[in-house]
Length: 244
Image 1 (cartoon, rainbow, N blue to C red):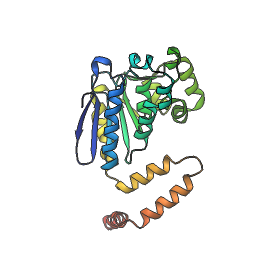
Image 2: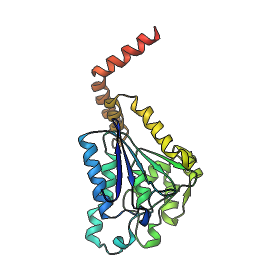
Image 3: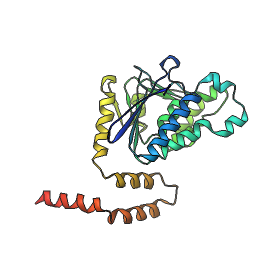
Image 4: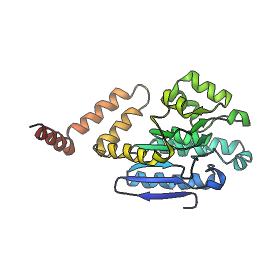
């Protein structure tokens, strides 16, 4: 792929944005390649680690040169929005490892992942209103759920950048680490996740992401499936035998 580097192991896919000369700006080609990644993970579910690759960089936002020339029909097509919604719905957990700026569409890409960790030099921001548009790829509804409506509105209205320490205290990220430790920390989290039942992970993700009002029903149906899963019986048997 022209804009991504991909490495694969038995349980995960590591996807690195690879447009350092453009600060990993999200253009049409990168969007198309990330759709290919999604299709691959929908066919063969694995954990996903998404990172920016270049030292001190995640994604500087959408490609402004392309964005400037888009009209209302392109806006209504939801080019980035549809991609990020697809990432959010991937079968197994995803983690964004953020180093340096995650701005505009780059921040929204991180919001679409299940988990986010970052370095102590990372920052998040939504500068769209200063460019005469709105954050149209998920920030207007995902960010309030992640950090609360009041703070989300402040960031969306002002374009202020949220630094790593504030992102941690507000729950936008779960860990802040030194740049040299970022990928090892991300892999460590995925290692812990990989110890769980794959079916339990998939159904847990469905339950958490269910629309308002559907949670109890999704949870009950998912638990009913898991209660009769052979892996549940094997795992619980192993636990009881270990206690003996």
